[in-house]
Image (cartoon, rainbow, N blue to C red; front, side):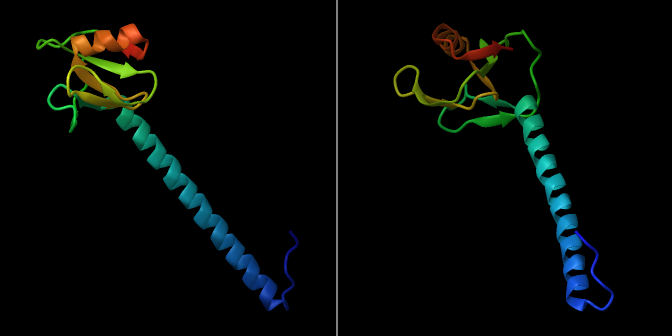
Length: 122
């Protein structure tokens, strides 16, 4: 793009506005990439507890050790694909998002593993 002449007020104004818009877009792109990264970190570190009430899951802030089952016969798993309104037992409905960690009963983890839905058991 050529530089506007000194006498071209409209051209100079346009150049200033284009520069301001470019700076604003760069700042927005940085904010969006930061927000995406924050969500990726949350998905990696947070464990959703589905052992209490599957209809209203709560989030656990601490991460369980990898490969260790919990003392109360619950395990932390990560599903390979998104599952919506899956039924396990009478009246128990579960929804899972791919890549997120969930604390579930060993029975449910075994069922998911048999069906091939687990990405890995943590």
